[in-house]
Length: 174
Image 1 (spheres, rainbow, N blue to C red):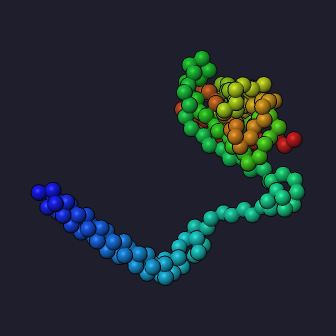
Image 2 (image 1 turned 90 degrees about the vertical axis):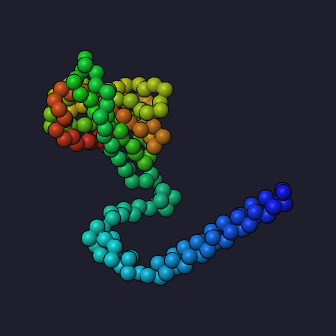
Image 3 (image 1 turned 180 degrees about the vertical axis):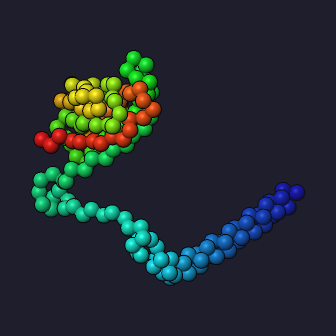
């Protein structure tokens, strides 16, 4: 009895393996045909110029000496409001490609900023913080530790209106 079960299971596995090998061969031949068909590539938005991708070429730090060109990236999202400071809150996360001296950044918004908070994500603590320059501008002034790719600068702004009305960022050059 066990020999007949073993033979039946073996036959079933053999059939499954053969089916899968046939499917793999079919997919391989389809990929080979697609790889030779350059029409898709020729008509792409990148090649035709309809949707170009911005490319920035910089010399690696070893090629020309010195630090790489500074790049700062910003991301913003809703944050948990604090009724003491405002009905709404927005979180701004700034990342950079190199180590900075402290964590300094200014955010100016069309609508009134009631207050804010600045920190470095992942840091155990910071020296300094931030404050409003005026009703529409908040500046972080973290002296230590340094803002770096490993420690993004996080600024949370509190406000009462439905949104901040569009914001711009500026990094004070050393």
